[in-house]
Image 1 (cartoon, rainbow, N blue to C red):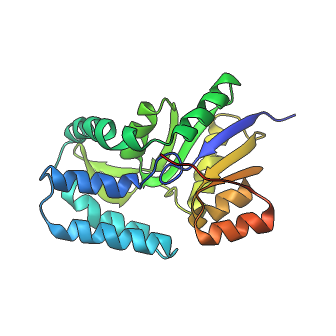
Image 2: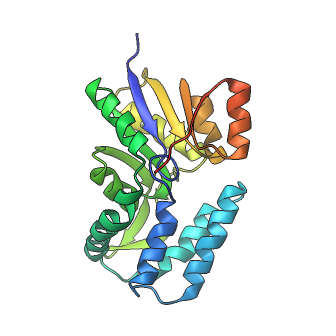
Length: 220
């Protein structure tokens, strides 16, 4: 009998918000970025993402220009404050309870997100989740570029990245429970053995009703 693994989307699933959008807003508020085009690109990203038509490579190539000459070590310092002040306060209490239940049962927990991995991994550490997969970015001279490294963990890419991780960990026969809010994660939903939607968008809610997936509503 295969053992269980719990896989969580991050944005609007474990937290009440989108970490990528909040990170850009944080950089804007701290005057680390001063060009309003980055905020505009963020707003367009969110609407395109919700409409299922986001060009992830194009978005990241533009948005990461703001950080292309800043050492990763400095970004990590900003991220520590960002996670403490902007992310921890919006961590769903019910998400914490669910994670604790899995920990008590020694069920491995993993975050897989379409946000850049340097943000996702920092948040995962703060939430006490040891394994996190995000979109890896090519680094050049110690700085993040806008070029995606390998497969982006977005839509079908989430399935590919999870399969890769399972193979690396020799966990290919695991029973996968997957939590998400977004129709963009339908490929992952169809790949998983069990699906739980969290505050699902309209399209995902319709799919959940068709497939009989469990639907939960989490609140701050």
